[in-house]
Image 1 (cartoon, rainbow, N blue to C red):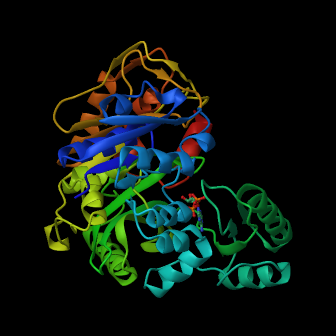
Image 2 (cartoon, protein in one colour):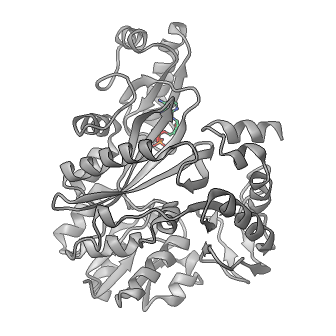
Length: 446
Ligand code: ADP
């Protein structure tokens, strides 16, 4: 096992990683910007190094400073968390060249999955069902029209280097193709420095269902069931649950097995998520994330497996602590992402937390780095914590979630807690009857 791990992230995920390291007896190094000197994970880490000013490009994305912090402290591995450098193949390669372990998959796998066209091709070769669409990048409008006519309208034009839902354009009919192709390409070029786009069928009312996988890098690989992340605003997940209210056991095992086999076929190492759209009992691959996800705790709650512990085991060469047949499924879990934002306008609300009282009790987990008196800096994303609740059944989980939300007090700033209090009381949510457009429609009406 590692002696010392440097955590190249901030906020709740830095604390989450620190906890797993502590349980394994691993020394921890926190790196932080000047804006995060008072963060909880910085206080709890064995050592801390300030790596730069608030702007992420000068601190959390600054590879040279992070590498220097590693050499100064003698850390033998880096956990990148999510976001920042977690899916940066170059960073993984630089670490390898310096004999520092990147806690994640190989640079090659990060690179393949970071290019959506290559990812889709690889997925198809591995036997994963994909959304019908173009084989590769599309430039010519005439070719685009031909492909769209073959798969049927509406179609979606997507950026090969896309992320965060940007660079996507829908064409409802052939008349829209020329403009949609042009806009998607120029948006993609401006946002990602790569104007390659591809075409796929636009699904009208899918759910977002993703499979958690874990590979040992030597051909071993498992799945840990699915998460339903259909409740999204602007393609950002808001509420995640495991298991999906839309899947039966047969569908769940079918897609899980496909993903586990794909992980084995790839020789994938570490944690990953295979994302699908699900409509009319069919799964359609959209992308693979080669890192730990924000919503990983719901999987931990239903499997009782510590995913960060497994990441550390695999990366240090100790292999996974379990096999597929050991993966059980206990009850139901729901996660609410608590953002420092106005619950109706979603305008960010940084500032000082005057009073903080998180909920507790059976089946309640709060992953957050904030505390009373903590000042939320304005420089980063607005996630301040996650409330994760577990129950033996979905109704029990919802009942406990409602109780926990009532108990949760964060004063001094605006948070999205009031939105979740409304959602948990909503009939469609209680029935589990929602698709990826449900939340936007609900917010537009209320
Ligand atoms: P990004 O990496 O930008 O998040 P994704 O491919 O993961 O891009 O897609 C983001 C979201 O866009 C999905 O969760 C879904 O809401 C929507 N989306 C993507 N592909 C399709 C499709 N073929 N049909 C309908 N909606 C889609």
